[in-house]
Image (cartoon, rainbow, N blue to C red; front, side, top):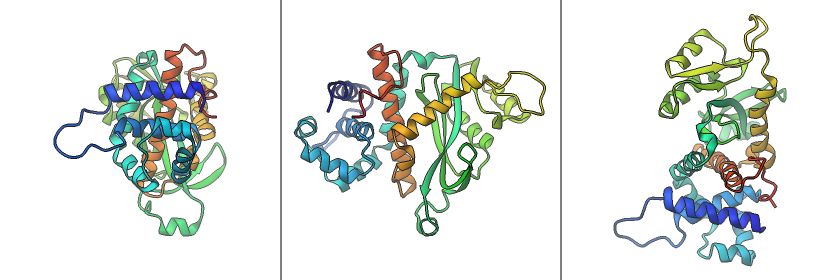
Length: 296
């Protein structure tokens, strides 16, 4: 464990314990591993790139530094169950971190959808508990088909997640994004700019965003008159955010086999990225989405 990672996890634990996890009331035995420690451990697992929960728990038991940080350790099964139960707290922690950063007040958000593969074989497709939720989709950027879900993410310019969801890849992108925006309408400020891909073109979708107080900004399509150009330099931001999730936080190696499991593991990775961005803001690091100090 590096000093930078130790500092990040300690700061995260304090924030989560003070502002995310509600105080425990009522009768009953208190758990030895608190929810604040559980969330901190979940972030550490992703930053250390342990896709397997079993290997992660074994690593903590074998390392004296990790044992000192998490003295009340669970087994793999208990950790897995506690983590799935803590889904609302993981989501709440992301928003708490986002609200602490200056980028929360950005006038422009960027949004895109990226594949989340959940299976590689026909037998997996037939037997998986994700049947009915996942489906086949096409990834144009990699020119390949996949079976799984699609992550829709709206974030600030530095990559801090603001709203997100998982959806069947057969659903229309405008339909899913419209539902996501409607569900999180309380976050939208009047005059907010939403930078999207050209796939979100359409008169009805533009009118919908305008009624929410959003100004939709997207690249021009080939059959349109010049309006915004291709916006390549700005669009590259969301592509780099997706690349961080895939290359450094192993989004495509999440290992989830149920709807709740996939959602938990994807949220884990979003929380890890949000934690790094928040910590880099507090330490005045130039590159806000840099994970180099924490991933080894």
